[in-house]
Image (cartoon, rainbow, N blue to C red; front, side, top):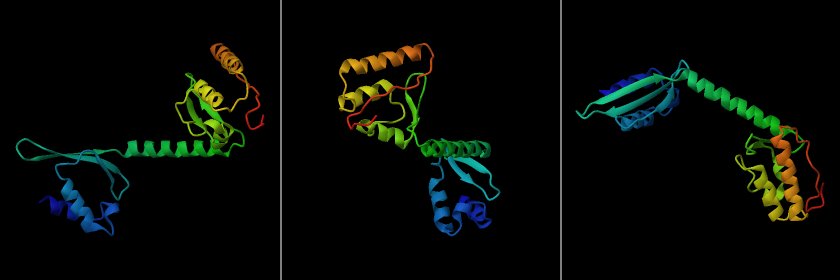
Length: 178
């Protein structure tokens, strides 16, 4: 029976996550039989598998296994690279933000959020640069006339349209900082 197969594999040490909790692990696997779709697990030699159980109309169970070691390794490498990038961005003493071609925020650091403190609660990936500026204006971050904000954004759009570099602009915020 299925329980004997699972128990033998656990006893051989094929499921590192079962060590020290063997009976609960076996019980969970038995409860999943026929209901599992895409369970991922690692075996002792380091390989990763995904397996599914599906009931047939005749009352049987179809079990599929697929090795996914390469996919898991790519996911782990990507996660590590993402953490490394986040650490690098956070280590900058300047406010840093990266926007995509549509002016949507991809990533920023805490310093950038702190510099935009009136909007810090809404600065998130996907936010458009213009929305950040308008929200800051509406929340009193920029003590300038509305027309000035319109000029800032119009100038920004012109430079972006010509694929030029934006070196920045200076303004005094509502806290008297430049």
